[in-house]
Length: 103
Image (cartoon, rainbow, N blue to C red; front, side, top):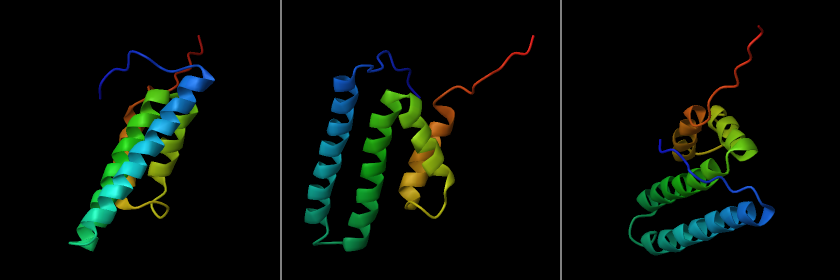
């Protein structure tokens, strides 16, 4: 996992990350619709893998609650396809645990 040197904090910067992720997912659907003509099952698996990667990259930059959402989604086995669960499982190690010192 690479270290992020910039975390967007303004509303506009955070919103632009979501819009960018949406554009990437839209592009993945265009590729999927073209590939679907030749091999529907492989195209669907590729779509899930590409979308999971793009969504994870966008949310991991945002940190905070966006990263927590990916952590929670990776724990539920029946909610998302396997490609999403596997990719979002990397978020379990992306944020350091919250340590409380009692001394």
